[in-house]
Length: 364
Image (cartoon, rainbow, N blue to C red):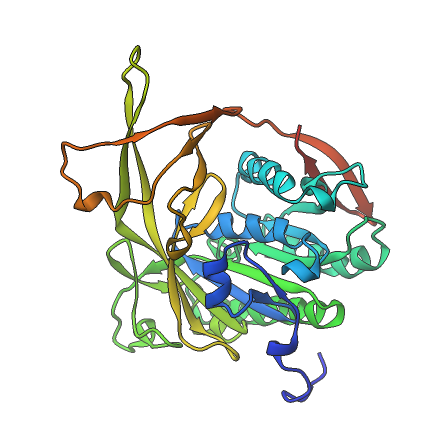
C-alpha cells in the first residue's frame, strides 16, 4: 500500500452502515464506516455474530436508509455457521423491507455470500480472489461489506509462544489488515472483524494489562478480560468496539391466558453493553442492548408495546422492570400468533470466479 495523507479523507465523510438498531447507531454516530477496519471484541455468547449477521442484511438497504445498497461477503472461521439464525433474520428483514425485492425474484439471503476459512493460508488465498470477485460479479447488488468472523480462531493453534513464531504471527497480522484496508479503500467497502477475549493474567512486564483506548479495564461476565492477539493486532485496526455481558438478566415470567392449559414459562435475556474502545472519529461512549428474536434492540429504544420473536412464537410484551415487582406477581401476556418453530436451509446457488466458490443460501 502506498502512504497517503491522513488529511486527504476523513472517516466522518465516508458512508456508514447502519446496525439496524437506533441506539447502537447513535453510539457510532451513524454506523460502521466504509474505507475502514472496525473490530468487534467480545467473549463467546455476547452477540458478535448476531451483530455481523444483522450488518450483512442491513448492507442491502438503500443509502438513504443507512445501508450501502450492496451485498456482503461473510468469511467465517467459527464452525458451524448459524444458517438457521440467518434465515430467521432474513425472513423478518424481507417483511420489513419488501420494496427492495418487489421487482426482483430474490431474497436477502441471495446477497450474503458465505465462505468458510480454515486457517491463515486459506484466508490469504481467499483474500487474493476478492478483488476479482468484486470486479467480475454480475449480482444485482455490488459487494460493499466484508465480515471476518473471527480472526482469533485462525491463530488459535497455528503458532507457538516462541519469539520466532510471535514475529511470524505479527507479520501475518499486518498482511491481513493491509490487504483488507486496500480493498476497503479501493472499492469503498466496510470491513468488520470480530475478535475474542482471554482472561486477564497479570504479568511481570505488565503488557497484558496495558491500557489501550478509552477503557482502563475490560470486564465481561464478572471477570476482567483482554482482547486476544495482543498489542500487535490492536495496531492493525482503525476502530475497536467492545461488547460485554452482564451476569444479571432481564427476567420475565409469562403465563398464557388459557384456562385449559394454565402453562407458564420464564424467559431470560442477558443484559449487554456496547463500548467504543478507540476510534479516530468517535468519542468515548456506550449503550446497553438486548438480543431478541428480531435482532439487536437498544434498551432505551424498547417500546412499551413491542413485539419480539422467541421460542417460535411472536409474543406481545410490556416494558416493565420485573425486579421491582413482587415475586408472587406475574406478567400476563396474550399470545399474538405462532410462527414456524424451525427454519431449514438449503444451498441456493454458487457464484464461481477462478478456483474460488462463494455460496449463497436462500430461505424457503
